[in-house]
Length: 352
Image (cartoon, rainbow, N blue to C red):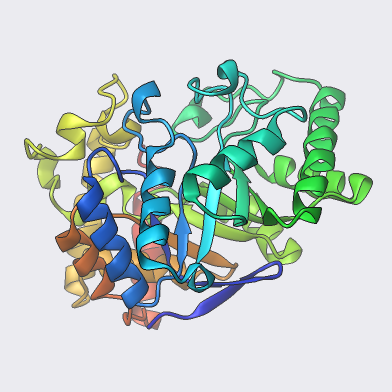
């Protein structure tokens, strides 16, 4: 069953449709059909980004996912049914604004460019894709260096961004403001900057979270609970590792691990497909099936039932995958299942 969550002044479905494959791994016609299926199921909260599609992001496809969503809106209508979230790329995006990312002087233009591609006059949730000062997301926690920028420089940048976004919000182009790949300190610093500038307050942070990636459970979980900042949990299935298709290290030839993601020394699937990651994913499947649960459904239910505000982002390359996800939205984990998950986490902490 789909429920709702509050994000500041927004009311959104408590499941979010992720779209990062639309226009690359997911062809346009299939993407349009997935959006039909999602809204038919009650998922009215959709997340995209100006740099999508990814795996990898490329100059020739930059903005294509927003354009496909715009095509859906133009052909189906009913904009008022949806809550659309998109993101401004940081300098790591590399394919827009001369590789400068978002700055006080260009953030309003970035919003306008997304509005044009989406074919709408407003965005419900506008997010910053990566902190300019750096991030520990995507396995960068092993070498994270917080000394890259001074506190004063970071605060000046935050103040400038929020002062610019204050005008964008006043113009009705953006409803709420969110972050992505952020830290606890960064989230609190943005909240303080909102107090200083009168700019929009953070209502969400989109970070990786799921049974195999639980960095959020410590300091950020408390920030989220106490400051009414909702976690938008991306990759709750560990980029497919928890689906079982990579069991025992299997590499299906048409899978993302085989065709789409980097293959660095830290493992495929963005560094997730390590020996420990595979072992943890196999153990999750055994645990879930032992409880009479589908491993995918159990993972999504786990994120929905956390003791802090959270919304899982679910994405699918193919319609069959989306249908399988939708079939498990009534699953609720009981006390026995939660106890088993606690034991699983102790046995497989931070597996990649």
